[in-house]
Image (cartoon, rainbow, N blue to C red; front, side, top):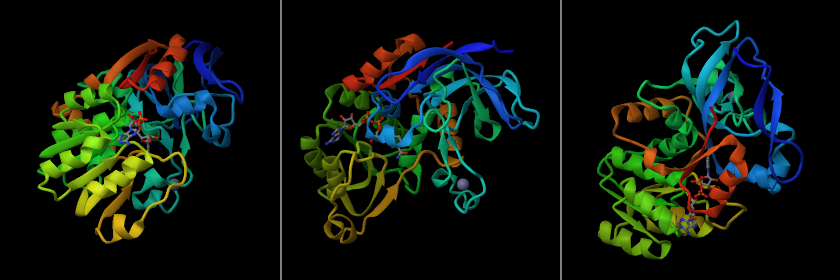
Length: 347
Ligand code: NAD
Ligand code: ZN
């Protein structure tokens, strides 16, 4: 059983920073479970909330516990929960959906308009304990560590982007943006049998990580056009995974995809940007797919199968590990731009 008071990293008020506080142990409802958090991932969203930028100000209502990527052990289950038990090793889908709307009922829960996100719209996982609806719990395969379990959320973004609606075996792929999610995607494309993976970024440390994860070419944006031309006899790549959200990279994605190719868009531009629909999309016959989160639960099943088989190992992407107390350092590591995945070792 859990203690009465536990640690939680809290967005305490409408301003920059976090506070590590003692808070009451979260209470669970009848359809929820209590999870003792072992490992968490830290992500760009947490940096937005830490800095209290315009997006965070518009979206978040302090005080709340931050963090949405985690894995841990179940310590208590609600009365109505049947398929999760004490001692289970789990992670969870952090998007809590309504299950009743048109989208949820047509297999599209990842775009449920009633989605509430842990660590954004309700208490999150940078804490000793988190309460989660049992429907969102995902059991970890025996072969998967808490550390890898703790980064299933961003890995799932990469799996969703790389695999939804695409056929990667034998295909040429350009990954624009080698943040943690882009680097995961490189490894997934490799495991899925892409014949040539070209990764682009402005940061040499991240390009080196992309190479480690299996990129055949890891190049600057300036070098990308030449690399694509050489790899595809001037045709352009079959698939682009856009994982930067930077307008220049988005234009490059449409420029370097082949006629009739596919652009999978994960990166989120900071503000509205101009697109020349006629030349960038329509006359090229390009298919564009907008990625939101992870498909429930197709993406989770695929991710577990790739991990279990050993064909995809994300471990090299994790470059920084901190105790929860060192949250300022963890945020600084992400802002520094050189990090792969940053994690908290909670307990
Ligand atoms: P990140 O910011 O760490 O990675 C972006 C990378 O793009 C950086 O390494 C940066 O150096 C690189 N970059 C900058 N300019 C570039 C250019 N011209 N060409 C190529 N690369 C360039 O972000 P992340 O955590 O890996 O996430 C990737 C993107 O996905 C972000 O925009 C994030 O907001 C978004 N995201 C979307 C979803 C979703 O559900 N759609 C979920 C999570 C994250
Ligand atoms: Zn819904």
